[in-house]
Image 1 (tube, rainbow, N blue to C red):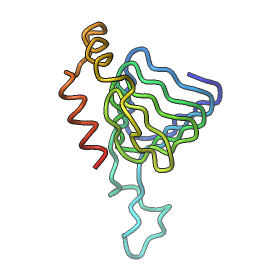
Image 2 (spheres, rainbow, N blue to C red; image 1 turned 30 degrees about the vertical axis):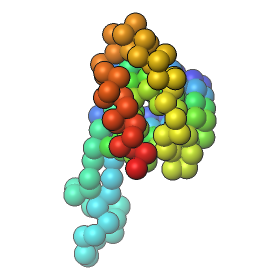
Image 3 (cartoon, helix red, strand yellow; image 1 turned 135 degrees about the vertical axis):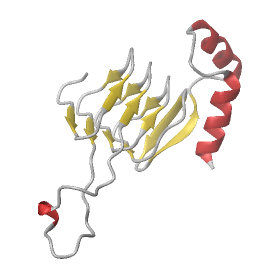
Length: 137
């Protein structure tokens, strides 16, 4: 993990193997119930939507990335610096922006097929393509 990494959450954070964090990465989890009548938000301790953060194996998260609750970052994905990750990201893709979105596959298709076999990936080539295309819609 890079310098100044902050994990500030009440939800589970699952981090796979061989994950790299640049400096200044922040993982924020948990939620507040903002709809209860007659109480200040600070006083409400239940009712928020709390979902875990999952970062699969072989992920590289660039500098100053913020990851919010309920996000799953797929195996082999690169998250570009200063991105705000509000939704899950597909495996073996390069993603960046605010909000963070998949821009392209991490490798050319022929190279990706070979890579997936070489590293004993959790995903087949077709699964990677299907998820990438689904996220891009």
